[in-house]
Length: 249
Image (cartoon, rainbow, N blue to C red; front, side, top):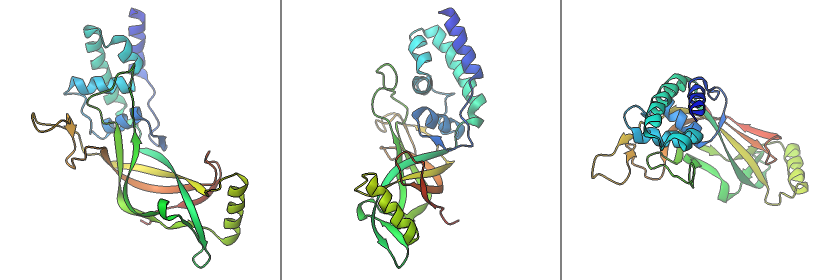
């Protein structure tokens, strides 16, 4: 067990962080890493925050050593140092995937429009990640946010896919042949994090939420985000690109 403790400590000190330049897949550990990078999550002042953070980002470490007060207290210091050292490499860009239903092709504007129930009109924010269930060994953190909302720097409107009639007809035939009778296309939002308001400790007697942001949205932690592009694919595996929307600058 002592050897395992030493090995895990070594892994913490020399762990390879996620690549910040790529659009990362949304995961709870990486989102918490991003909070650390933007100084929105202060691991230095509250051991309860750090313990929850470790529960999510280093479950094996938490599982084996949390019950040992002395070993865990030493590991807290290592986790703090490791997070501070690696924070510059934590992700700042993510992709969020969703599907949208197409309606009718507009021959005048050459736009394959979205259906009314999945239209993208003046959208200012979206929930990009929510975790439900235990985080580690049937334990759930008390202080960490588990739902994240991307707030866009500009409201997003995309009436549909700007495609010529020939491309649209080929897409329609492809969807019908694939059994996609509802005519869904699969969108990937490429998002860049701009700012995250720091979590503040709730004053005693002021509410049930241990930490909060000033917008006081109890449902999700808000992340200020820029949309770099939205890619639309005709297959759910997102290998066949049909249209790219780039927001105007």
